[in-house]
Image (cartoon, rainbow, N blue to C red):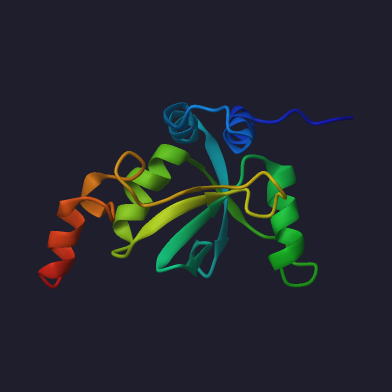
Length: 140
């Protein structure tokens, strides 16, 4: 039995083929419920390129691919189900460092990164807005 892709996974596939609308992709991410692994009392994230990436998954199959690579032994991995909008609007600003959202990172040819830029995260924490630069420059 073939599992159908979520609307967000479909938008990601379109974008990766070069036929998607980036604004529609961001909108779909914001409306989608993502499964985010929980580790050490917080959401699982990774740092790369000076950015902290919260890792979210479009469905249990995508999460399972990740768990196979990152879980220790036979231990189950707990996760939270969060709206993409909540991740980028509430979680990212609470981290006090450049942060974005990485979706389906263990899915070959199916991952997508939503960086900490204007239009994805709030302007105050976007690395390309004057607000974020000013706040970092004033010792925040």
